[in-house]
View (cartoon, helix red, strand yellow):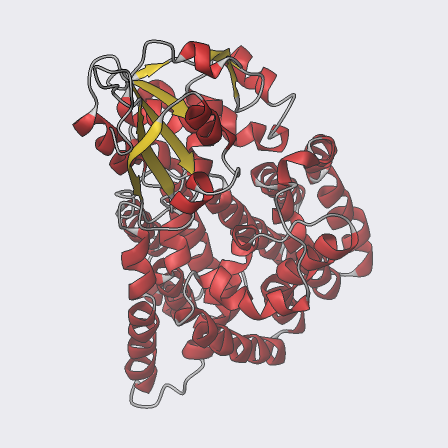
Length: 494
């Protein structure tokens, strides 16, 4: 479509449409901030908020160096507050930016109705609510993917120097959000190759992309040196691609339905314009396929949140399909609106789940509440995984039992702790032990060494609590048995 809008199109597309789409999407996303911070979000707090700038830079020398641009943003942002909703607000705003630019990109590729529908479908995706209310960089990755595709379309309209430079900037921003966000670039390069003269592609797009990829190349080298941080990821087979629609949409009901609709939209767009149909098709399928290739050939790396960068293409393809319904007697509205509502309704169970207090799978406030409601003077607390300390300190502040093992902050997310647990607990009758995982993981076997050490120090289990989600958080209270006057310990003494 031409970059210069006709009067009729301008009437159908008020300038404030992308802004309104962005604001509505940001509001939908920020409404999901009632959930407790997840373990990953606590890592953001620990890295970017709880440390001075020097401490943040030191941490990224050991782990999460590829997240440094995002951590720096949150570090500056946190000067104005540390509340849950405030730490998550940048992600909600990023989701809004993605929706706004997606609306205009849809308008450019398939008309005003496609733009509005793309933003509407994107806004109702449960994954947008989750990542838009998540203090992690994945909403930024999706936003940068949309902005770079939008900037590329402007270059195709008129490959001026300023537009090419802005495209290079957008590619640089894309790489600064998350390493695997650049998996959308092959689709963009293919679209540019098909849409532009060969000389323009080689002299404008290729150099701009190369310059824009400098930051991600540096961050990738850092990430490769710290790849131990993702050693927990298990390898996957091709069957994981069957779960991609669910992962991108955030719903096992809405995802497959919208994916089928998006495929129809991609086919329609290919018939109208091969370059931009190729962009939509590649954007939709290449990120999960290429990520799986990395997973199988280089190192296990396939994680569902890494493919959220393809979620805008899911909404875009679906919008093109809906906008292509024949206009006679305005049946498009009669079809499009119910379909958008149907996608929203299919996603409601996931939307409701994400908005529960344990919607991000770690209920720190409830775990802290269990301790604070039952603690006594002189109680001690021991962490099964030392990094959990950051989450409990965030929600418990100073109102927690004595942290008897803490020596100081380590170079990464772990804390330096005393090794002599029995001596540290000397004189303590009650000790709280908290760990990430099920009750069984800590109370049976030796999966949580701290539990075994507490028992070896002479403590017995008094009570244990576990959050609703798995693996979730477990809080257990251990007590020393009270001896009788004759020096014997009753078998069930607490």
